[in-house]
Image 1 (cartoon, chains in turn green, cyan):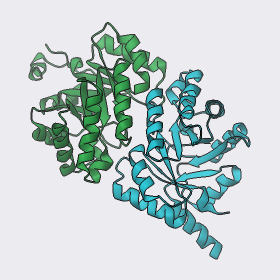
Image 2 (cartoon, helix red, strand yellow):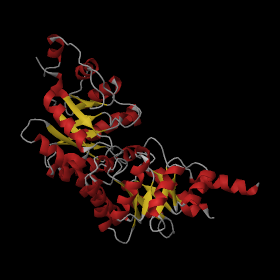
Image 3 (cartoon, rainbow over the protein chains, first blue to last red):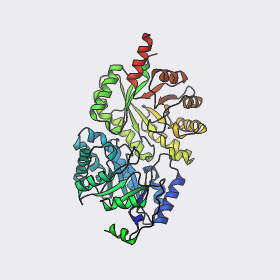
Image 4 (tube, rainbow over the protein chains, first blue to last red):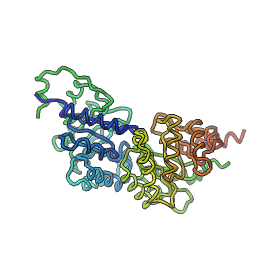
Length: 226
Length: 220
């Protein structure tokens, strides 16, 4: 039986997050065998210290949550996070460039971060709550061109997170070329499962939203085995 | 009082397009605001729009969470200065602060100030997440780190500046460190109130409305 926890990125991204919160996050991730923890870049060294010799991956955000940092600054933040022990990078797309239809700058912004992290996993947050359908498709196409590993729906810092509709649009656009992380406001296992069934490969869950553990049959679990 | 010269004309939402930044700069020239305040990806564009004018460019750093690694903040600031920023508004590391890791709070600020000794550094405390005694402590740490200004808010937190915030910050800043009030300043009355309490700069997206309100009041 596949454990859904193995699909979860466990996040703690609030500005007031303390050392103590990060210790708790890492402990909970270990106890539940989550796939990864996702934190802001100032806490990568601490998380690395706590999770070395475990299989839990450390994912650092970059230019979070606005995506409006200069490309050079994004690439540097990403490179530094990897040097300090991050296994994965989650950068926010430059939404302003997308809105300006400056697609070349948008692509370069992603590619420069990708080049800075030496083959480590790159996830790009497209912040669907700020985009219309055409913009979601365009963002996905640019992410495909940049050969990113994952497209993530949301930062969790705007008024809404993942939607089934958006995940379906993303899946239809990227097919099997890019994986998908559904994020933002996912509060229970049933919803998480539904996202996995319609095409998400990973679920991002906040430490603050305690996912209610549902009794799920092996039959449902088997649907998400890949 | 020339209210316009107190104002950092601000546009920091993630969706801001090039055209909106160009408009922001045009408005800043028209109304002779002190500066435009933008995210670091738009510093070059703003600088270009404002060349041969007296309007300065202010870039935010580690914005709005302040939770970037110190090295990344330093690099973002350095790049912004290279791109033409005259001033830097960085966010304090609230997580370190809440962890009572005070040394790392001021060192984070000092590391940024060190690469820009001749430029103005404003440190955003994000007062909405701080108790009264924490506002005093955060002000002290920012000043210890080399802040030229202590600033109340990002505009992305649960509230903006308050009268109480500015009074507390003034107690620590005295006359040696300046104060920038920001977040939720939408009318001339509030703007003037903050200036009278000791704020030397105002961060707002409502600069034009504030000036128009001020002018129309004077006409009565």
